[in-house]
Every structure is written in C-alpha cells, then in structure tokens.
Image (cartoon, rainbow, N blue to C red; front, side, top):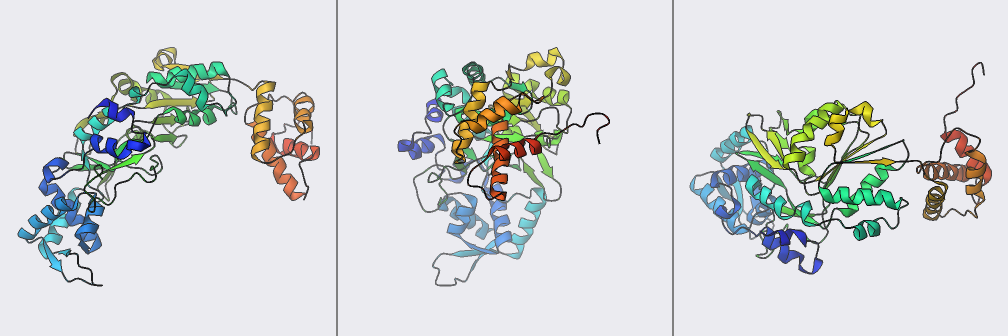
Length: 444
C-alpha cells in the first residue's frame, strides 16, 4: 500500500484500479484478518435478525465475497448451526436458516457484542489505510487556496493565513466578533481537503466492533461503491466505502463523552468518537466556549493527539489502544481567546486567525452576491440606503452576515405585501425587526 495510491484516489479514470490496490478484495478468510469464529458469530447474528437468507443476500449484508460466505456457511453446517430451507418464488439460490443450536450461538454472540452490520476491518488495516491517504500527502498551495475561494468575499491576506494552516497539520483557531463569517469560511475550508478516500464501515479491536461509517460525516461518491461483493470478482474490498473526505462539526452540544468511544450498554455496541470519524478530513469545533465541557478540558484532550498524531481510546473492558489522528482540527469562537485559556494553552494552538468587520467594499460585494443568488433587483439604491442612512444612524457595524439576513427579511416583507420588488420600506422594516432596540432610560 503506497502513499501514491492515497494521493491520487480522486482520478476518476482509474478510481477502481487505485481502490483495488489500496484495499484489495479478500479471496479467503485469512485475507480478511478476521477469524472463522468471528465470522461465524457475525453470520449467525445476521440470520437471527433476518430469519432466512440466501448466499448472495448474506454476502451483500456482510460485504464479503460469496466464496468466503460459502466457506463460513459450510463450516456452520458441519457444526449443525445452520440448515437448508426450502426455496420459494422459484429462487434457485440456496437459502439458510439457523438451527436451535445456531440460535443459541447467535444469542451468546449478541450478548458479547451487539454489532451485526458489514464485516469490520482490523485496526492494523485501518491504520495502514489512513497512512496511505494521509492529509500530508496532498499539500495545500497558494494557487489552490485562492482558486477554491474565488467565489467567496474574503481578504487575500486572510486566505494566505488559512492556507498554510490547512497545509501544516496543526490546529487552527479562528476568532472574532459574531457575524464576521467565521463559521461560513471554516465550513468552506473543506474544499481544500483533497480528493475522496476509502473508509471502513467498522473497525474491530480484539473482539469488539466499533461502528465507524457515519452518513452525516461521510458522503458517498456516487457510482464508486462495491456493494455487490458476491457478484463480481473485480473491485476493492467491499468492507470499505469510497467517500468525500470527512467533515465533522460540533457546537454547543459537545460533551466530553463524545470524544471517547461511545458504548451503549443496552445494545452492547460501540460508536467511534468524533475525531476518529473525522480522520482524513476536518473536525470543526464551532462556538468554542459554549460547549458542555470546560474549554481547558477540551484543549487538554487534544494536546497529546496533536503532538503525536495518534489518539488513545479505551474499551469498556479497560483495554487501551491507539488510532491515527490525521485531520485538520479547527476551533471557531466569538469569545475573547484570553477568556477561554491562558497564554500557555493558546501557544499550543498552531494558528490563530482574527476575523474583523467587513469593509464597505467587502460588504457591497457580499450584498451583490446575495442579490444575485435570490434574483433581487438592486440598482444601488437599497445598498446606498443601508450604508449611507441606516448604519451611520445606529451603533452597529457592517458584518458579513448582515446582507443575507436583512435581504432575507426584506424578501419576507415583499411577499407579504405582494410587491413586485423590494422597496426601501421593506429594508427599513427588515432593519427594525433584525436588530434589538434598547429603550432609553425612562422611555415607555
């Protein structure tokens, strides 16, 4: 498995071949890295859940070639764990169901570990996969950064700070007043993550399976999956999926336990923590300082992983193991950084980038973009009214979020008033409803 394979996975003309070299399809049980006994337990759990299944359906569920599934079923038949069932609907495929002994085995296996999805990959295979597709294999250049943000209103000097930060592998701290575009820009940094990658459905540690694939963080690349593992000899190991590089975001809902293996006692199933699911991509901690975990504790959680590029996790049995920490970690906050941590902590953060209020030129550019996106006609009168009449007579400064929010409210008023276009009165109405008015002392 070479690093070159990980670099060029996005080349659509040879995607299948590159994926096959990175994760070749197993041809026997030994190639999977899993034991016959584990595969027997997993197959029994699938049959217990479904009742009766044919080999092709089992292969699709397990994401394993049909030949391996046949081998497992043959073993289970010799152990009197499964039996052939009669066909129906003229289906010529052999159908299997559990015997009483097989149901006991499935129940015992579920009591030990409740997972019954696609067959997992080993921790060693996962580590090699991350190394081969590492973020460090695709450096971020100035030309690439400016091209990716060509349609975004952002200062060139800010881009020239964000670019090296993305390329360095160090953490990134974005701070500034609310509404200056921090979250918007942070999310668009995902454009710089590089081409798609292979990710596993699940990873096994000892005999415990960790569910890894998360549709909320891992976007499948259409037309490049290998689900029909029983039907085709070519292709890559179907225990992996071909996805865009992960983007994981968490805000005020973040708790300390979300950064550790999440174990459900009732179902006896593990789910990978946020940072593990973000490997080979980006993890955004938004609204830093408003989480349900102390900021100092959050920073302390990342000190060792950031320095050593590996993270320590623990099974509920007490077993410790390490996983790669190959991701871009981005913090975003509108709180004064010195109120979040002292200088000693802040020094450990790689890049600290300040976002300021919008200049008149930047504000106008954003205004025009919002107008174009919403088919709003503005000959300059609406923008001039906002910049020359409204802001000067208020205590507010122009922010990057204001054009979108004000014009959005004005559109609401336009539709309500059945007007053909947004009028000055709609802008004034939007202004009054958008900003909080503070009554003077003694005013009724």
